[in-house]
Length: 257
Ligand SMILES: Nc1ncnc2c1ncn2[C@@H]1O[C@H](COP(=O)(O)OP(=O)(O)OP(=O)(O)O)[C@@H](O)[C@H]1O
Image 1 (cartoon, rainbow, N blue to C red):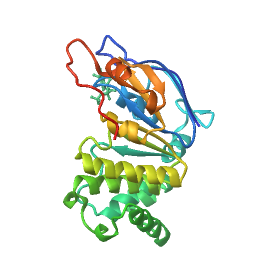
Image 2 (image 1 turned 135 degrees about the horizontal axis):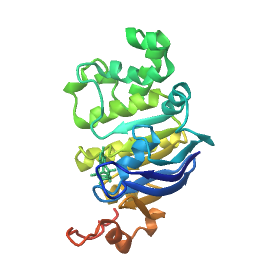
Image 3 (image 1 turned 90 degrees about the horizontal axis):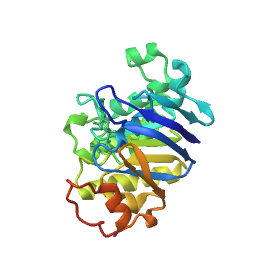
């Protein structure tokens, strides 16, 4: 479904590449968590997949089609199949829950309709349905700036769901949330992932969460893959290889509850 071939990203102001010759293959139904300490290349990897970062070299195939050279119109179609969930939600604070979720339909609309912000009843009904799925119906007309972090992330998920994605792509979606809320958000993502048989790829800092929800774990270090296997195989040794550096004092692998 998603194939990454020889992906390399080199930022001008850096001696080391942020990603170096990354090769990966992902299938529908996989729930992948990406691990790695700060600066390992996790965000750069996710940003390359959804086109926010242009790689220096390599190719990305979406259902066998190379996407890096695609024309804008085709790329728009691919992007709307990738529901993106961000760490800082990327919502419009002064708009309501419903209005924010409706922006998820922009990938399906003409530029004119998007510009005038006019939505027909069918679009509004679909938005109400995904808002119900994330249990925010009682907040539907509230401005998102009045919501808690967990509620904002649920708006972000509903917006992604309105795109009818084939994939969830998350860049640290629970890093700003307390552990209880983070688990609640992951439960929701997992439920939608299973219901719609998505491919899910999410960067996480929290190894316990990654081991609890993922079907596959990938760890990056200095822009390279150093682990790609089942969560059960990610043990003390792999944890140290991923997070240890001479200047970085770390604890042990958190116990998987
Ligand atoms: N826009 C940029 N310009 C220059 N260097 C960048 C840019 N974005 C990232 N980098 C560098 O690329 C490397 C990988 O960064 P990236 O943000 O992908 O890491 P990460 O694993 O997501 O880290 P974190 O967990 O802290 O978000 C780092 O050395 C970072 O400083």
